[in-house]
Structure formats: C-alpha cells, structure tokens
Amino acid sequence: MKRYLKNGRMIILVVVNFIPLRTYAWTDDNPPSVSQCVAADVNDVGTVVENCKISNMSVAFVVISGAAIQLASLPGTAGGVPCSVNMTNNAAVGRETIVGACRDANNVFQAVSWFSGSPGAPIQLRPYAGLLGIIGGGVKTRATGGNLQGIVIGESVDGNGTGLPVFWTADGNGATPLGAPLLVPQANCIPIDINDAKAPSVVGNCPGGGGSGGRNTAVLWMSLSGPYSALPVPNGASYCRIDQIDLAGSILGECIYGIDTHWAAVWGVGGSGSMVLQTVNGNQALRTGGTALNDTGLVAVKFLGSQSHAGMYEPAIWDPADGNINALPITLPPGASHGTIAGLGNNGTMVGNYETAAGTVHPIHVASGSLAAADDGTPAGGQNAVVRACSIGGQFEAGAAEDSNGAVHAEVQPIP
Image (tube, rainbow, N blue to C red):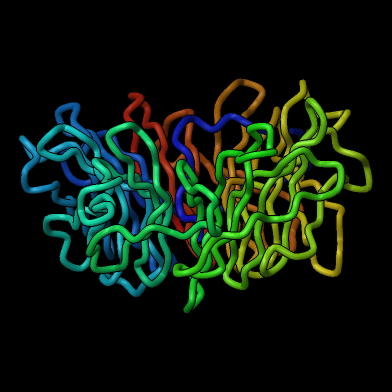
C-alpha cells in the first residue's frame, strides 16, 4: 500500500459552489525549538512522521500521541545527520515500522527503518550481497514502499549504478531479490508498491526488453518468492506504467496511447480484465491519470478535458466496479483555479489541494459519497498550506502550512 507522496509544492485545480465555513482541529506538530517541518505521512492512530530542519540539517521525527521523538541516525554518520522519513505503516500505536533514509559513514544515502516504540539507531536496509557475497553485490539502497507487516521494498544499486528489485523483512536482515521469469533480466526493475495482504503482492515497472522498443513494462509479483509477470497492455495502448496495488490485488496504472494521450487504467487480481478511463461525466477526456487507489477499489483521478481551465488537470472519482468506465468530477471551493486529489481513505474520504485565483494553495477534503470539496483552511496563519498524506482508513490528514513569517509547520487533523 503506497503510503507516501512526492515532494514539492502542490499546485493543481478548477471552479465551484459555496461550501460553508467549518471548524477545524489542526494540530501543530513541530517539535519544540524547531521552526521548519513538513509532515510526510500519517496513519489511522494519528502517528505522524515528519522531516524538519535543525541548523539547516535534515532531521526526521515521529510524533506519537502528541509527543515528538527525533529518529536517530546511523551510528557511523558524522554529526548524526542527515536523515529523512518517507512513510509509516498502519500498525498499532507504538508498533509502527517507519521507512526513510540516512547518510552512512561514506556520505551515501541508505534506506533505513525504525520502530516507532523504540526509535534508537535505525536498521540499515543493506544492499543485496550478491552471489557468494562477491558477484553482483550492491553498494547502496533506496526504499520505495512498505506494508503492514513491516516488509519494505526497494532497490539495491551496484557500483555501476544498476538497480536490482529487492525486499527486506521486518528485521531488516539483508536484501532478497524479487524474481524474474526464466532468462528474462530484472536489472533496473523498480518495485513501486506492496499491499497489506497476509501473502503480499508487489507491482513495479521494468525497462523494456527485447521487442519492446525500449518501452516500459508494467509487472506484478504475485508473491515475494515467485517471478514477475508482465501485465497485459490494453488494446490500442503502446505501453503502461504501474502506480499502486490494493489489499485485494487490484492494480492502478496509466497507459500511453499515440503521441500525447494517456489514460488511467485498472487491472483486476492477477492482472486480469484491464479497464481504461476515457470519459469523465460522460465526456471524452483528453487525458486521465490515477492519483490514489483505496482497498475498496475506488480510484481518485485527475483529468484534462476540452474545457479544462487553462489546460490544468481537474479532480474526479472513479468506481471501476461492474465495468464502469466513467468518472465523476469533484467540485472545488469558490475561487479555485485548479487542484487535485492527493489521498483516498478506505472510508471513501478524499484529501487534496487547490490553488486560488490569487495563487495561494489550500488543502481540501471531500466527504465520503460527496462530490464537493471543502477548504480545510490555513492552520498556521500564513497564506499557504498543503496536505501531503491521508491515512489508509481515511481518519487523518497531514501536511504543512506557512505561518505569518513564512516558517513551515507540520500539521495534522482528523478529517472533518
């Protein structure tokens, strides 16, 4: 289950009906004496992981039941920093696995994990040792996702810069390669997401092999021990990319058609029965793309229609159940120029961001069953705020907000 979002200022949205003012319950989660923090992820018990600056150095924190705890760096790192955090899983409070990265003694970033209840020195998620500990060994690692069991997926990169798709068990004892079909290379395949199933599946993207013309190949590992299989490409598409897999095994991606057209796509369990989203509100969309998939199969999407404001993407919700291939648009708050949905909980609640006509950015949420977005305010008193994560169940949202002096605060609240 994908639990973290891409960095950067979110600027993406459209125009709407009046939404009444609401009462908010945002909490400033900046640790004492730290003025710059951004929440990276939040889970259903309200545990928040965040990236902060102390004396211009990157430091990671976990906030458990309101108490901020600095996450320790690797023991050999000079000065104890920097580290960053990407995600936390959805385990019980104090039992979460937190995934991030720290520089090692050679000043190379390595994937690491911490246990929230005892966040001492992290577990270094070490590279694959190679055959006999000699051939094909890695020198650095990068984590790309994790699941409820504490299994982490990512890449082990060798001295030539070639990546190998791997996973680490919760104890972090060495990288295990994910498999490829017989005689098919797996170099530079990138695992993208792992689900929370008891026997988890993984999805990813591999560089095109022979006969592919260099196009991406979307792949599925049905289990951690078996080889991947290539997902079928829908009729008319050149190739597809994969983004997410849900608890049941449904898969979200995007397929490329012709020179400048791409549409969101969903595959069923095992990669069966792909459906492609070409229409929103019954109208053909020039482009669609998935932004989040929940464990009930709902998909938050963005779309570019012929009437889209200044060529900007707009948000919509798609329910592929029963073969539905039409999405419904989300109405944004008054004065919105454009926006997007960034997270979708299993309860159907959505969170995202919109840009006003004045160029400021505000977070939004959409209640389950609704098609109208509500402005979630600017909790730190400045002009801009952004939501970056929604908990899996849809209970909490987290992100960052500017205060009146431009300092950035990590913020979290129960979704109204």
